[in-house]
Length: 50
Ligand SMILES: [Zn+2]
Image (cartoon, rainbow, N blue to C red; front, side, top):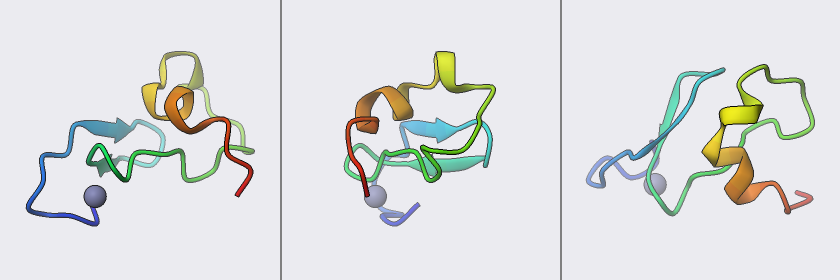
């Protein structure tokens, strides 16, 4: 969503936000998300604390 010229390959199912490869991370990793078991964004960025 921050790079309109890039292909948004990842989508947050909970917030309906599209991300490119670089920006893909869960916006609320500490909150509950029923999509999390199948969420590739969270699995990619889940190690970060901030
Ligand atoms: Zn981006």
